[in-house]
Image 1 (cartoon, rainbow, N blue to C red):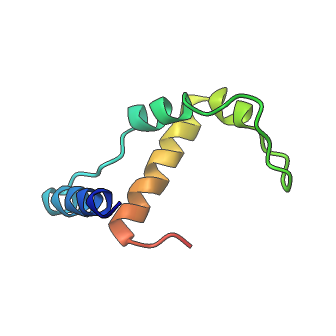
Image 2: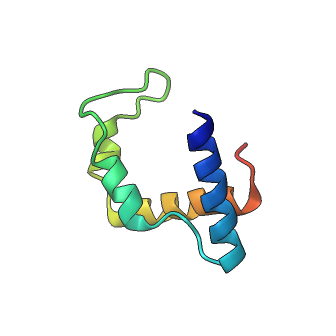
Length: 76
């Protein structure tokens, strides 16, 4: 676990120093493709199918969100 944390810290430090960001739309699209189908959230009735079948604009927004979290170092 410590090695994973160190790898992530190294990637974030290297990427931020060069002005490039770590996440790309293709990363998000690939990750979403690994979601299990028909999974639901009991509170707000969100389904994994809605995310898997979403348009590319959602993946762009998720990418921007993750990059902003990396740049600013906070997720609230």
